[in-house]
Length: 513
Image (cartoon, rainbow, N blue to C red; front, side, top):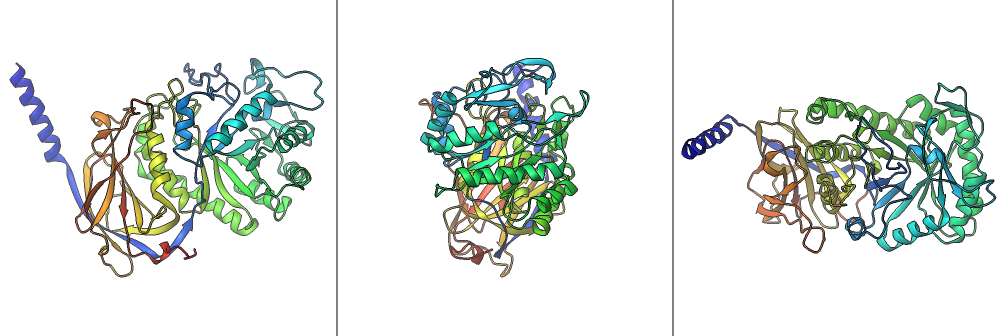
């Protein structure tokens, strides 16, 4: 019986091997001139306000991961942030428009968020005490994080009806003013103040409110050498609304234009993995990046584009999808796509919390996407290069950047096919020559443990990634191959390929976009 079973397994594996398609191709990297450029701190992650009581489709996934209850003393939290140093962290989310800052002349002390029938997004107002704000700033200073804080932009407004999420009236900045004043007085460095709303507000009024916030920041930071960024509007991109906002607010008011992306579907959708592995579906969001880029070029060339929040799957993410290997196909593809449209920062929802956290909500151990973010952070430089291939299959996604902190070029290759292996040669777009300076290239091949796309363990070059016995982030070493040999990209795998000293004038230290 055992022999028969072993023979069956062998024959089954042999059948898979024999049925695997192979496609040969040439990748041409245009190293002559950069086509776009990302920011110095492109990788960003969020910490939200959601309390443990938030549940989506019967799944309660937030635990103690919020701005007010996250355990800042947990050693894994500091290590995870410091490995990405300096990591940009966005503090905010939908409930930021319900937050009262416990500072200044308040009528009554604030209370924690509570579930309330008929409340905004189902919750009451919540408070941020200054003792907690002090703790957060000390922690971020210690870990080297760059902080963006989302302000309550609904203060003073009122709903037009109980059944609508449309709000009207002017923003009341009183509480925000006292909070920012306290922050400045304590010497806390907030890199960016975000004025975003999780509700519908008319663009004419919103434009006036943004100008008001700009005046407040100019006043409170007038004696400071450091000037924070003003970030807005941090909602789903609407071309007409965004265009009008830049026109109404005027030059130099909004430094950063942000938008949210959840393009895979809701957490209860049964076709999430199909969409993640569908190249046509992944490409649909490219229209948003392109249109936002046009909005800035035409109406606000002083501003830059950021993705302020993106989790792929909405409603807290999907258990057994968002926190597994398969999600990295979406995540890395969107990082690559966003880069080609000059997106300066990409904030992942979330660092911790929900099912889409880079870290496990309970243990704080890294999920697969954390390692994807870490490799991007270590390998992909600011300058984005043009890349094309003669591969006919749409399942191979290719992106190329100048390498980070070193000469050369780094490729990101994503194979969405469950059957085709790609065998690739890489050459310079202009001279059509292979890299002849360095003898070896570095390869980082990512696959799921046991070939299970829903595995929570990522495998790098055949070695499962897990924390060391001391709780440290594991070494993530490449394998080396001769630069003249082809690259082999297995079905349903991802690879970063680093070519040292690749002939790319755009990657010279002093070259410009």
